[in-house]
Length: 360
Ligand SMILES: Cc1cc2nc3c(=O)[nH]c(=O)nc-3n(C[C@H](O)[C@H](O)[C@H](O)COP(=O)(O)O)c2cc1C
Image (cartoon, rainbow, N blue to C red; front, top):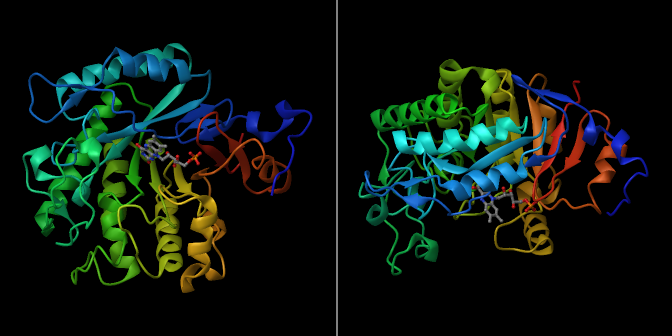
């Protein structure tokens, strides 16, 4: 439904301040995380990429006083990487590059969170030089994406992570988060959406484990919840956000029991008192049109009744705020602003919408 913009846009909650963890936003227009593939290859470390002046100018151009930027997905380790031109945050030169980015954003009185990324089974050992890891030994069927810079070859059959692999991976996230804060980021966002490593644990078709990390919706959330707990201890809960895609299909995620699982996950993460949970709207899909995606959801038993973020938003309680993204534009964003009082909704310049709990 399209709703025209209120005449006095400045008086809407879009331009009201909001506490988001440790920062005070002066408006609620948030830049979504957007992979740009603009980093340079490292001359020192194999299979790693480093932020450049182009990254600095890209973020500087989008910084506004009191506004929040979320960085492109940023690998936490070499094993987590796997797409050309993506700057990680696990080597000194990467941290130096990111420090230049955060400096220019802060010079404009803006804020920036670092999106922490682990590709899990969606990477390839030929790109990382390391074994590919995932929740279970279930490969993606698709051939690698062209941006991975390989001739099409079958995806790796991933190694099913042992309990010590899980601990090691959590520690890589913690080190990356500490690097991010030391490089000037205002916080970190766990990329727990779109079929990457945490989401590989979430989905029952990718995670067939029978230990405490699989087998039930609650156990499939354990990898993410424990990770977020460790990040909160390492950098502070007010500097941690998480991105989730309860309706995602990307990277062959076809998990069942979604509403029970993501409601539980949102509730648990909110209980930790993190800064925000960032949800992707059901209508958005990487490959399908909005109409195709909604049609697909209509034909699934677990989404036929309600393809909406409502149950997940309801599970998120203050002080944790809620950010939403996916398919917002000036024609559909104002409905929420005018009608939703508990959560007020916001549109971005590019591709993200902010949906905060309204605490000034
Ligand atoms: C070019 C491009 C790069 C993206 N990179 C990321 C990313 O690095 N991390 C992420 O969580 N989402 C990524 N996304 C998804 C967006 O953050 C967003 O969820 C999606 O575009 C839906 O919002 P929109 O309908 O406003 O575009 C990307 C999307 C695009 C188009």
